[in-house]
Amino acid sequence: MRKLAVAAVLALAGAPALATGLDIEVAGEASGTIHIDLLEDVAPGHVAQVAALAEEGAYDGVVFHRVIEGFMAQTGDVQYGKAGGDMRRAGMGRSERPSLKAEFSDLPVDRGVVGMARSQDPNSANSQFFIMFEEGHFLNGQYTVIGRVTSGMDVVDAIKLGQGPNGAVIGEPDVMKTVTVTE
Image (cartoon, rainbow, N blue to C red; front, side, top):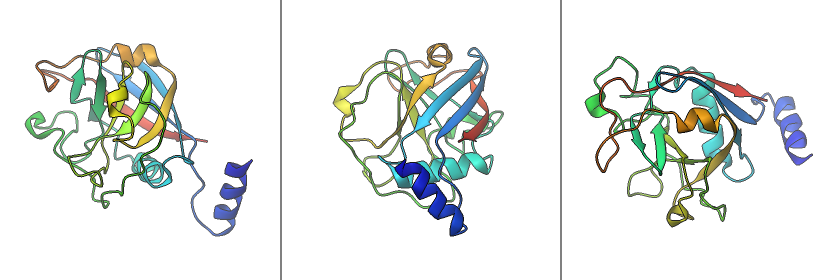
């Protein structure tokens, strides 16, 4: 009910409505759609930024550049992570939007949780995010949780794995073909 009331107020004020989810169409070794329920009440600033980037099409064609078996798959580098580009810098980029102040919560980092990637600076999240393959409670309270996979974990589990300790994907990485905001 609160979400609907806030959305109604924003609509009357001429602001965009709140997103409730993302549909990510994945192509490559993994193929299918991942649906993510976004947690506006937990991380409103991060969710707004990710939704805006998705609405602009910034995530379309961005690869999963860092994928560590039993841990997570990372994507969202809209600057250097476009399919067909030079993948040597993938993971080092960001969007043209400002970095975000951390919105840490008490939510556990479990299988299917979506969190914002960042540097050592807690206030450096921008466009990149990760999806957990397994629980990673050692990350609790250190990364902003923005959502949960509600369907398509089979697609997440099939994403091409990276190699070595940093999980860099060699060859053709899987790609977010399209990312759509859902209501």
